[in-house]
Image (cartoon, rainbow, N blue to C red; front, side, top):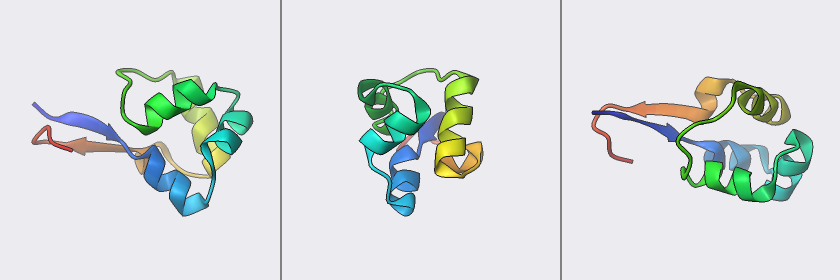
Length: 72
């Protein structure tokens, strides 16, 4: 079974944005964004995904990747 991989760290690096700066723009705690960045979440609210995309000027597909083999 495949898995969804979050690439928030890659997009943040491309945009040269820190976790603290993103947390402030999105209105989400650093802890929650850190879990998202490290792939330690099993769900994300669309409102949070929308806010992250707006802050990083990206599309949801830039943040999410599907791995068919289930390996990261």
